[in-house]
Image 1: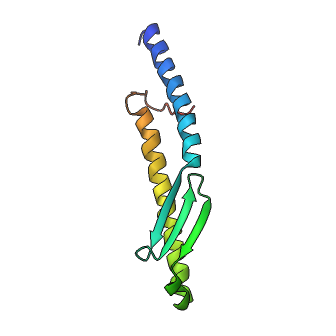
Image 2: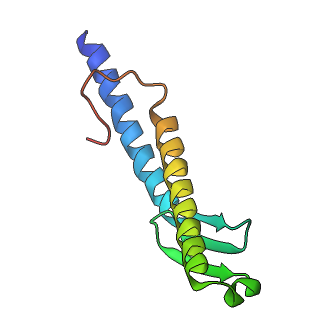
Image 3: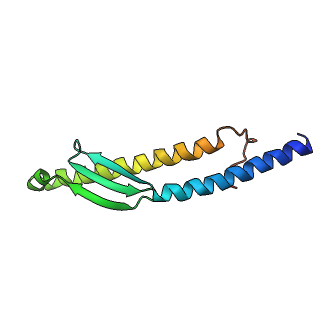
Length: 108
C-alpha cells in the first residue's frame, strides 16, 4: 500500500468514526415498541435499552398472573431485539463501503 493510499484509508476511517459517534447519539434517542400477545402488552424502549412505557390491555389484568408476567417479559425482549437490530443496521451501513484490513475495527 502506498503512503497516499494509507493516508486516504485513515481519512476514511476518521470520517466513519465521526459518523458512528453521531449515529450512536441518534440511536440513544430512538424509541421502539415491542409487543407480545398480539399487541396485548406493549413496551416502549429507547436505544439505550431504557423502558419508557408499559401498556397492558385491561383484559389481561383479570387473567393469570404468570401469563401476564410472561407477556411483559416477551414484549421487553421484542423491544430489545428491535433496538439491537436497528443499531446493527445503522452502524453496518456506515462501514459498508470501506474495506478494512483484517483485524482493524472501528471505532478504534
